[in-house]
Length: 446
Image 1: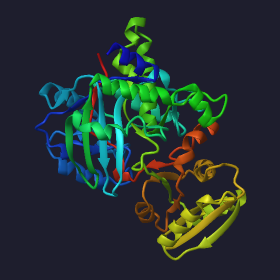
Image 2 (image 1 turned 30 degrees about the vertical axis):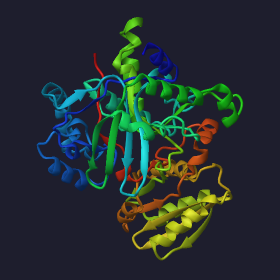
Image 3 (image 1 turned 90 degrees about the horizontal axis):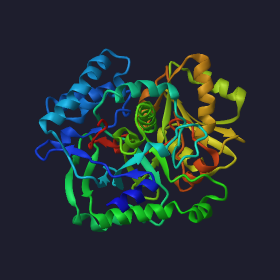
Image 4 (image 1 turned 90 degrees about the vertical axis):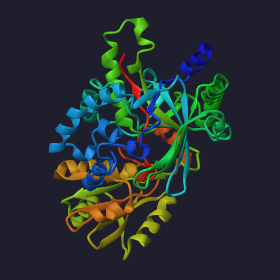
């Protein structure tokens, strides 16, 4: 086991003692979607609260972002830390032996995503814009969002992860082989997720040979010669890309930097705050779908937005009669290297807008760089929406919605390695109800 731990340490991993609900728990009520979903839909969360009722649930261990700045924020926040301690004392959560969890998530869209729950070493991660660390963010980190999250983490006895990591494993050598051997490992959960979340099952992997195989396969991905062949010379090693939950990971990193100041050298190596629990998945997994994240500008007339865009870009604008035709056109134009095309809508107005001769490689970079200046100048509120229907619903006569094109995941790693972090909310790994649910936990204090 010492040899395995050393192998894992070299590739930024650690064997966690994962907490899962006891066998008599109602798992459907326990597992709840990540806090940053449905952030403009309080009815979703209010209904969820009623459905869970008094049953033990991860819902009681985090603050949904929809309640930020509302009277419910203080009430929920004050109860989180009490509930964490209560769940530990009462045996609602049980701790597994050190190991990984192999996860299979089947969504209602028919996608099957394979994942590996593991701990990552925050010493090998930096959220700096020009980061060259082994673990690297894929989108810009909004520094202002970190302190409030750190404040929560420094008081919490548990972490519940919704962070998704990506590895670039075209040969499918790390995670996919576990599907064939999963029945050799203890199944620790197998149930339907609530509210259109699909199905999930997990197998606990703590057998030496399986752990060693995983470590060897990831080590091979980190081979310098192989890395150079894939991405070119003189590139800093990036083994993991943070696909989802970047600000949660950044908060864990900042908390660790605060904690380690008061630690002795021998305490730093194994302190639980040094690590963060994440799910690792292969970007080449057929079940891993990249979806665009759309934008809605509130109290923003469509004419105002188009007017300022026309003053900055060479635009081509076309009218459409229905959302289906507009969506199809935006997707079709994705491969056009001479322009970036997106949809724009307000009330019954539907248009396709093409920015000709763009400066950036990705449409989302072109659009968001403009929006950042536009919303700041005009004091406009923006929200990021994960599906077309919700974007259309929010795009009333007073609001303007932007329907963005998808991102090609095949060249994703090379784009991040060559060009650095993408704009905030550049993409989504799946639809809103395909996001990670809070299910497992881990102690983050001694």
